[in-house]
Image 1 (tube, rainbow, N blue to C red):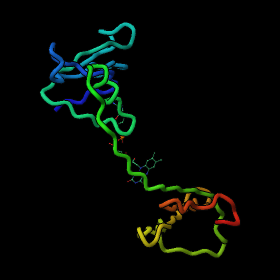
Image 2: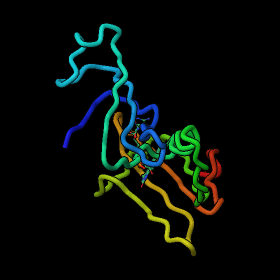
Image 3: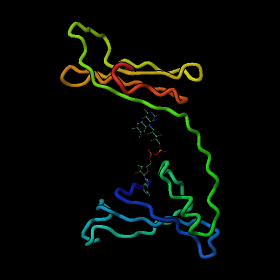
Image 4: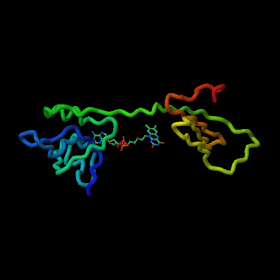
Length: 147
Ligand SMILES: Cc1cc2nc3c(=O)[nH]c(=O)nc-3n(C[C@H](O)[C@H](O)[C@H](O)COP(=O)(O)OP(=O)(O)OC[C@H]3O[C@@H](n4cnc5c(N)ncnc54)[C@H](O)[C@@H]3O)c2cc1C
């Protein structure tokens, strides 16, 4: 297996009949051991990377639909599952007499009955980040009174 760092895939390569994806084209932005910067005076180059199988793992910003369209294909229909989760956080100074025996306090929501959760993370200067979360549009407050 080979990892290519600092490379952005910018499109799919197809065979002449455009019936098969045969790789990707990529922009190499920075040097790696295999691609020393000296080879690329402008600091970047285009590469064609050939492959038997291309897996898009680029997350929710994937350009595969547009790239397939550029090859003349209908982009696949997308299914979106939105849990309508929100979370907010505030920084607090714990009471001076607070004595805790945990490093992190985490209250896990238990959907679908219970949408709410929260966490306390001790941070530097003896302060706590207190984070609240809610799902299914049960969004947590952002104001002090709500917390
Ligand atoms: C602030 C925040 C907090 C989160 N907290 C949690 C949590 O506590 N628990 C949890 O389960 N999930 C959490 N998530 C969600 C979680 O991060 C995502 O669901 C998960 O990372 C998705 O994984 P992925 O591999 O599909 O995509 P990503 O992690 O987005 O990975 C995609 C990768 O592809 C690369 N890439 C994109 N386009 C290209 C391209 N054209 N060429 C080359 N590379 C490319 C990106 O640089 C990235 O490295 C959080 C997300 C955010 C933003």
